[in-house]
Length: 292
Image (cartoon, rainbow, N blue to C red; front, side, top):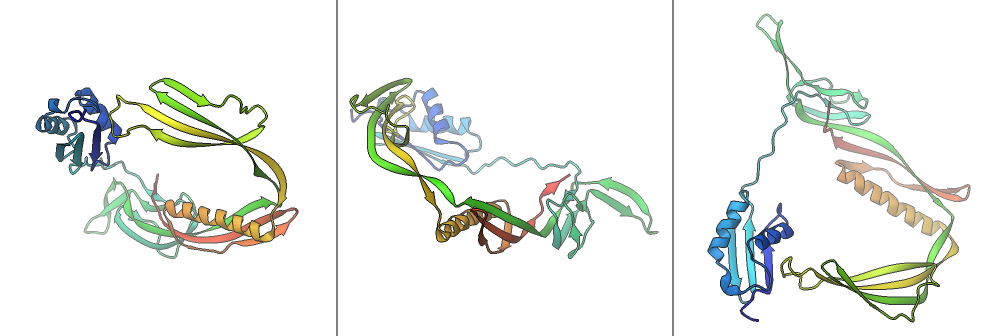
């Protein structure tokens, strides 16, 4: 048993997934459980470099009962530059904070108020002759940095009464073994779920021996079914304020992920008509990236 490969570890990859590399090794008859004497590390390195031309360095090493494949993706493919003539336009209403034009013709200046869809940098470029007359017009892809400050009104509602979930303490455990397309279930048949109207499912486990190749797709799961019941509840002002603040913080985080920064604005929470309302005026800046 010690003379066989019982683990294949892949590291250093970013663009190519571990699964895709293991699948290729599988096609070359390199897999977990095979005899270690049948592996030529140098030949395997050559095949990997030929298969993945964007990989600049490959190392295959057999140590004990494991095979280590290390990659370095240094020859990254160059992105194709889009040369289609287009204008840079505003993504939202706001005020231009700054504009730097590299290609094209600037249509606005810092301090100007713009509307959504308005041209910021035009694709049209005029060639002026010695006599200050336009001798030629050409179309390019606008390029530059335009920062627009905008205002957004935020509102969220949270009803005071709600239905909350409560665990009853009753639960049932089931074990599931998956081997390829076959499933084996192990559980106590005396504990029935028929009386459970609603329940949570907690699943724990995963792949058995994940360092082995694709030839060993064995998964073991432990599933716990916990009975829950719903009961009426009411949010206190403090609870409602905390929930609405968390939602507001998450919304601001999503805005940052979309390229917004310098966010300003505080959440205000008020109760009316049986609900809590959270409102805020968000002032933010964003680099404009929309073309037309």
